[in-house]
Length: 276
Ligand code: NAD
Image (cartoon, rainbow, N blue to C red):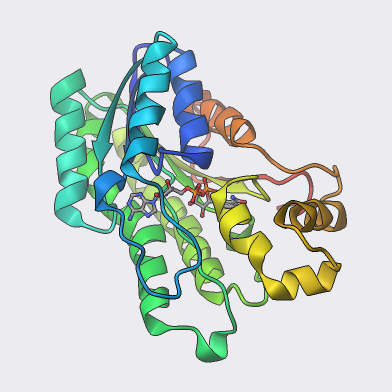
């Protein structure tokens, strides 16, 4: 699929990987809807380890794209809520006359031993990381089917192998890959291609506000600061010896959009950390 002139909705686009993907599509000439929680953001439980993005970040993501000459609007969404997903898709179609590409990027993480992992955190992870893809895709499919479309789900290397203390997150990302393959098989007859991207270790809030803060990880690597812990993890895990960036995921998303004969794959972008 050509990208210029197409309309793309990116969820979780106020910051991090989603914002990088939205900016890359705008640069290639697509009309972009950046969608995120905005004023709907509430951190799910008292011991939730990091903040989800705020209204000003969502507005900044859209205005930066417009300032650079792109066409972009921001819409608030909670991807775990059916009505909110429907509203996002309807408003996007109303504003721009159709929908061609959906990037299901919104995601959350919580870690900890399975033996005392909170049931509410398990449910929350599945509501966003799995049901979010289901609800957004359900809302978008009738529009994507009009001219043939593309769905890209942001899964993870944690959807390819298990990691200690990441049971809920890994299970949700394995599910995202399963859903990607099922939808690819089912939606091919409507010329909708469905693929996933599996990022490795990306320098976003998910790492710096949560994963690098893990005391266990700091003890394991003998590090004191978040930055040192992240750098030590990269040196330890990644054959290419460098972290991944949102721009790397954007490159993969542009490829999967253009690659007319590719559907059902889960493309790992991890510097060799995971190789399947
Ligand atoms: P991030 O926390 O910076 O971005 C996630 C965004 O999703 C935030 O802006 C957040 O507000 C939004 N979001 C959360 N819940 C939402 C909801 N219910 N509705 C709408 N938006 C919601 O983290 P990121 O690293 O940019 O993560 C993006 C995606 O990449 C996630 O799916 C994540 O699981 C995946 N991923 C990240 C890494 C990494 O190393 N950072 C690795 C593998 C996969």
